[in-house]
Image 1 (cartoon, helix red, strand yellow):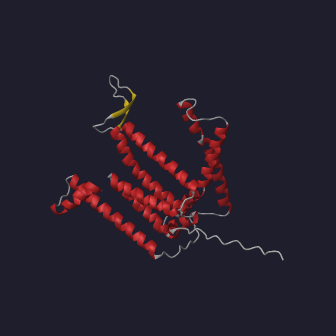
Image 2 (tube, helix red, strand yellow):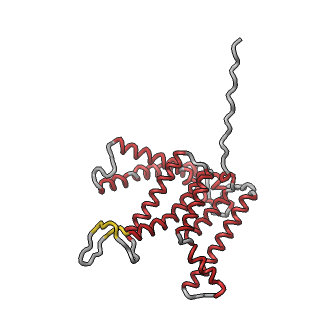
Image 3 (cartoon, rainbow, N blue to C red):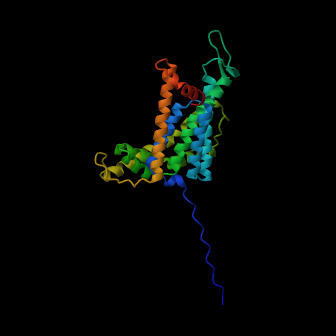
Length: 293
């Protein structure tokens, strides 16, 4: 008798992670709280901690290797642009030039890259990195339909909510089209900076021409499809959100309380700095905000 084939052992499915189980409304409130914190906080330590929170959220979203590489490239571009721009256009004193790009003239102080500007730009880039990490994590762990349901539940206008979720839905396709255009340019012999800076800038800006053309054609197709189905933002369908769990409620409560407390202490500190209001009992609070926030 021939041996019976043994069934292959079942492979356990990868758990989705706790961030995917959180209600989308809680994620949006958490993003709003992180946005407020990114504006209010000023010290390098607290901004780095905010980036750590964004990194934890991204890790909880469990991105793939390709997604992780894309996130690293995006964050590197954001950080480099902020550091370089502040290094060149830093206007405070003192400042120490590290590299002179344009020598000074009679009535022109020249253009240089300043050390203090690079440090200041690195600190400021932490704001963008924190929000980028958190935003990408929320996008990776939330479907467009969940976004639409959450925005409608938060009393956002249905037309704006539909436009936002439609744009999010086509982001992966836009990224794929961008990679196709760059591959076509590479096959035609394009190499960055090989033919000079101006030619490189012209070619890089030309990348957006086919992307814009495809986006216009796609928008026309979507508009025609919506019109054929009788879509009207003034008569939206009824969308009932799911019941919010205890963890999501706790996240919303914590985010709201944190934002209110941060705005309150920073407002008291600003009133003290501007000489509008001062209370001797709040001196420990003033010192804490000055050193840590």
